[in-house]
Length: 230
Image (cartoon, rainbow, N blue to C red; front, side):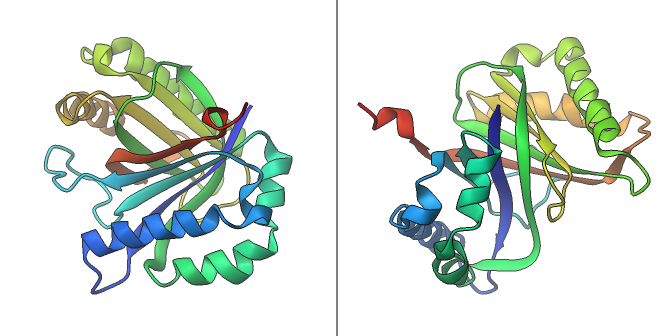
């Protein structure tokens, strides 16, 4: 099982994109010095929204970064979330550059539909279910759609990795995710246009199509404990 916290954030008003990215990197460095929070972490990714998102219409333009904090299991994620450092040090520090309104923050179990190699460009999708739907029914519908698109899309050969995230608990702004990885921005835009048209043409029973937020991004920071062990 791959478990993680994934979040999409907006920057504080008046803060430039460059300043935000610099400050976010410093926040990551601070997090790594907090053992109660960091010891359970096995992988950490920061992805910066593409500066030019014109090839990705109808996306969540307000979100400037997506973070992924990976754990070995749910218990380790819970241990990290309950650390004193998270509440007393990391949350106050993050509030200096994150704009807390409209944030997306969710714990997920990753389900791999295409377990390919890592690639430098990702399209993150966040989606919510209808209030009356069951969580598992919602996720099954969402995952089946992604599998169908991957199998039928003409541009699916450009896709390097496809991961759906099943929500673990009530988060903020989403109940599930999808992550699509590509070698280049052009490849991502080509697939996205086909993906978006197929999603828009789908009649859903449990998914709220008006809730879908898409953030195209460069994977710009990658930490993996395996590289530092032994």
